[in-house]
Amino acid sequence: MTNPYLPQPAEIISITKETTTDYTFRLKTDIQPDFGQFVEVSIPKVGEAPISVSNAQPGWIELTIRRVGHLTNELHELKPGDLLFIRGPYGKGFPKEQYRDKSLIIAAGGTGLAPVRNLINYYYQHPGEVRQLSLLMGFKTPEDILFKEDIEKWRSKFKVLLTVDKESPGWSGHVGLITNFVKDAVGENSSASRVIIVGPPLMMKFTSQEFIKYNIPEENIWLSFERKMCCGIGKCGHCRINDTYVCLEGPVFPYITAKNLLD
Amino acid sequence: MAYILTHAEFDTVLQRLKQDYILIGPVRKKNKGKFSDADLITYGQIESLSDLETNGKSQFSAKETIFPPSQTLFYFTEDEYREPKFEPQKQIVFLRACDFNAIKRLDLLFLENGQFVDAYYKRLREKTHFFVFGCEKSYENCFCVSTGTNQCEGYDAFLNFKGEKINLFPSEPFKRYFAGYEENEDILPQFIERNHIQVDIPEGLSTKIYDHPYWDQYGKRCIGCGRCNFSCPTCTCFTMQDIFYRDNKNAGERRRVWASCQVDGFTDMAGGHSYRKQQGERMRFKVMHKIHDFAKRFNMHMCVGCGRCDDVCPEYISFSQCISGLKGVVAHDN
Image (cartoon, rainbow over all chains, first blue to last red; front, side):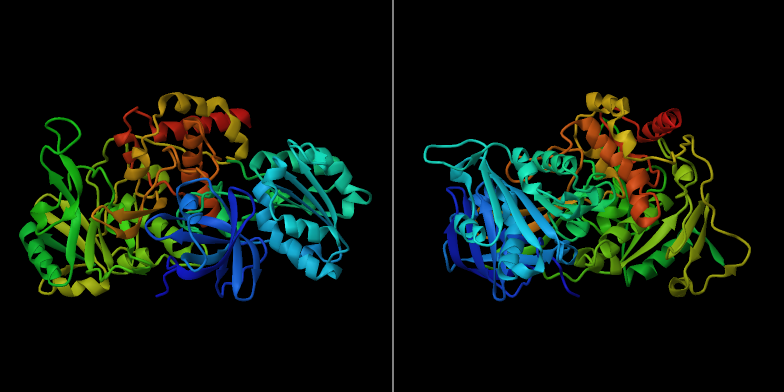
């Protein structure tokens, strides 16, 4: 019998320090996740946690991990060549077919950029698949900005709007909450656009409301949820909301489903 | 088809069964209860019929026989791991109808929810057979008749204790253990038909009830100890837990341990976000799962009416009264 809890060892190929607290680990693996899926990552004897895939190509995946707790502290001590354990990929990702030939807006707050980075990179390589892509990204401060090289790269093909909640010396870009810039991101013909919103719970709530205010139909919006998913396979119960298991039916949900998922 | 045996005759059958199975059932532990001079009825191995406690409700359910409170998933050494060498013995578990119905709920979650089968659960489940014994009386806080779980089918054997005799209804594969005893055509299994407590599970529940002040009373009263979850025969939540051994930090194990949606930390995520910080919200989450959300997914209510959550609550919160109260709230609001 196959045991779904068995993790596979994955060697760390490289580590990129995005910020002082966010590192991106590139792992050697055959796992080929869909856009928006997650994996369970563990260090034996320390613990296991769900982490979204922030980039993937045949042969490797990347995970962007913030140092915020017991497991992630240990993760940040690892070096290239060390082993991590992973299992997955799990969950339902972004329905890419529904964005084909549409104008797509991706709004990401903070580490919420990680679960959509892979999708953005895909469109960077296949720009003809969507009619137009706009990126709206918000971070707390300029020091918190993730994937700076990617963002510069994306600017060459997409409309990019990058804002910080609080500026620091040397910052000449936008300042203010992401919700302040929804109107700019929407532009004309808003009702035909598709929108992906990923970030902290309150950011997703208020950003959704803002997009709806600017005539984006509810059925054109998708969100990605973060929950404590101990097992990733619909058994442990931690991620359940109503009769929905975020690890099975999510983490990506259409807004019309998500708005009824009340904790 | 049934056998009517004396206790001594059934003991002979049990000795035959013991050749092939471990026998597990509720046993009484003298003076181990939570109050002085009170006994504890808990699940344990039985050698003969006299070990089986049929008069009284066990504090914990039979779920621990297939879903242990703590279960090792792997052993780690350095960067390697291996699964426990685990060849469970065949076991027969004696339990009541409510608890047997609860096993069906566990099966749905562990074997059918999502695309993966839970390997650890399945290994134990496949080795386990269930002998259900009828309740001669309804116990404190029981409301199984209201949840329709006073009756059951699909058991490996059913027993009715009738004074000096026992009416036994073995399934076909177990009849061979009754060889030499005469079969009786006329009698049928008897289930308990009345509880002191009746509840009426409200129809028409929805997320509209979430913000209702009804839940506030539980916010004030519940202390979040989780006993209701741990004693519940249908609660299945668990948490992964990695540990290393104190005398050898290079070795350790990954376990899963029972978790409670009422206890702090159940929804905690890296970075400090969590959901349902108030006990009232947690009560709502639990109650809605037991009598609404589970049924939406699996077409049967999760709660089996055993009343153990009421038995063990240190704050005297009553689940059955909560449901009845909710019925009133729904009726009023509609």
